[in-house]
Image 1 (tube, rainbow, N blue to C red):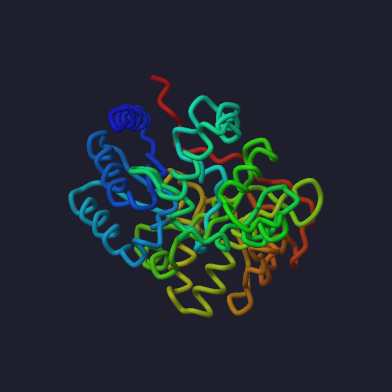
Image 2 (image 1 turned 90 degrees about the vertical axis):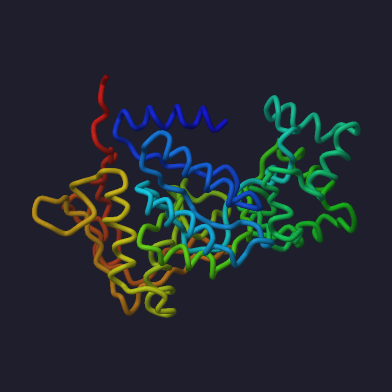
Length: 343
């Protein structure tokens, strides 16, 4: 509830923190959700950062300017509203996000019981097909197109789009029912990538001076125990994609603006005063890359590929990547914002 969120945000204000939030609805309710987040920031008097700003339903594609107008109006009123994006048009979630909210009540065990029960199964399928007021339904968000859903978790179908999965399973009709069977077979959760937002919208948000870039990634590697599933390529390619594809190849923004969006703008948001810029007294976190060569190689169906064009990485003053080769240095530290007020 909004009131509960306001109370939480006021606690954050007491600790001088940034209120960073995934808005309630990124699909057909995106405008109302942005307004709600801004209203919370206004009432609680906190800074606001909207995570992964997007319009994730094709019915509203092309309307990012309306979202930007809401944010700019709030900023003009003195509310410090910012946002971030990742430079891709697909997001990571779970196939069970197609199951309506009421069927999740009580936890995963109860959800699985409802998926298997003839009394609730047909209702779940109907709600997934038709949607519910206020529910961000990933299936309708991607235009009910199974080719725009890709299995990304550790699963025998990993790396395949759902239309190919159904072909392998011999599913000719009632694909929603078969998807519920898959969730039952996999005990309720299958990580998936959804092609649900539009590149022009993403770029319009990216170009705003208050919008930074983040990967929303996890710790993966191309081999060893950190190679798991078929994850979103943003885990390997976010920043090289920004610098190589959108700066050098597409010329969507300047190199200087892009670097600022991945360094000092992010550091400033969370109050890191000793990182994010090259200056005397700052921590020596440095990346030496070739602006004429840097590029991402990770793909949705082949994500385990490191980028090219990065020659040296220095972490806390220690060389970690030497001429493109990781030399085993472990110099990273947990980064924390300003010290919390004990009172």
